[in-house]
Image (cartoon, rainbow, N blue to C red; front, top):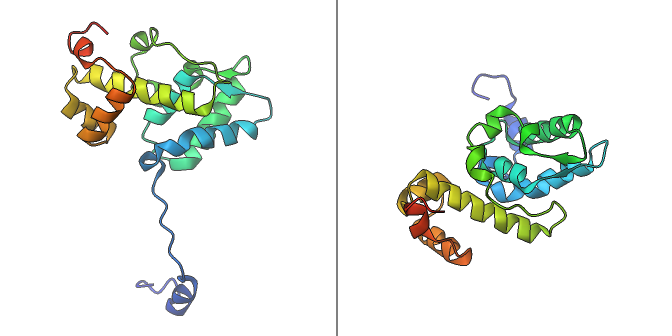
Length: 170
């Protein structure tokens, strides 16, 4: 409007209701539902492993929902069978993960209920953050983007032994 490229009267006519939609990186809890939606639209029936989903949830998504959609479509096309694994995801997403550490983490089958899958993803993300910070919970909260009370509650909910992580025994 200030540059004269958009009519001021038209702007005020269209600006009746403002809807703020935060970027995907601020609403990671929406990612599993979006992934399921994109997979249902896939040409072939495809599912995603919990580890691959965890990686998607840990990524910052600078390209927002469109980047997520493109990532899922690409992975669905290149996966050999009907199961998307971490190796089907771009290196920009998987590069932040040390896959050797994750090999020991048990994963649920893709047909497990979504609440169980989300709980496992949350637990694995907390464990990974605690490993990266040497078990220092204050630093882990910074990595996870949550407050200390929330982390304490989630550690208790998932029965995570922080002492064993601090001693590198986990």
